[in-house]
Image 1 (cartoon, rainbow, N blue to C red):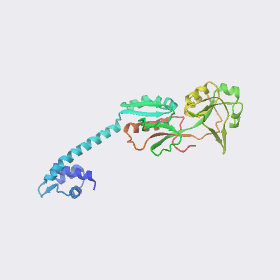
Image 2 (tube, helix red, strand yellow):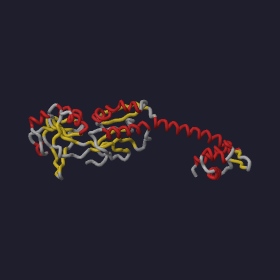
Image 3 (cartoon, rainbow, N blue to C red):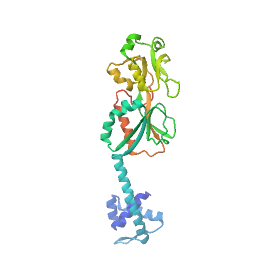
Image 4 (cartoon, helix red, strand yellow):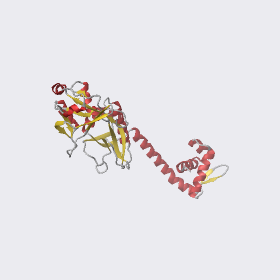
Length: 308
């Protein structure tokens, strides 16, 4: 028995005094309404309605039950209406955390349109690459690159970040254009990314026609922030290997030149992550959908899929 539907059927019959009128208002066959009320009475083990050939009236137990359930149904419908309005008009504070360059280059340029669409959502953005405790810090969701293996979290892939090697025209004029990754081991300087709080550098592995080369190379400067990486590269300090969404605009305007274009590193998957045991609010839902749209519309990102 669908308990909620049975209660609705009883309330309609009690208020209209007729199974036929209740069936019409519920858009159900009359025999279905009769069976629902009978099932409810059997479940409760009480008689709710007195039935005669001329009229239907409530028993004393039925009247008491109707008083309580009619009020509960009204509150139920109000809650559903409020949730429906919240889905179409989300409001309130949304705390998100993401890398600085994701925030500044992908999200923030689109926020004016987001605000027009969702004017009652307040975004508090934490821009950093540090690990975030979503529950302890009361963060609604985070955007992170790479694999997410924590079973207490739900990770939805937004897209993938292709990687490219770039340098300024002036640097390449001085040091030459590398045609093979082995050439990066001598005569060139790399701008390396070092993980915050450690000396471990982000590895560079380039592949072409089944050949894979791990690049070590020399570096004059290493940084723990991709924005600083880009600044060092634009200053002509070396070759940067990093996400195309960071360097692509500068390649398009000629400030940087892509090198080793036939040698590819796997595209890095990027996810929006939130706790599995937390109710996904309308605010989070619309933000997830917005970020999917942002990644889909960017010329410097790839659709969701495996690293490639």
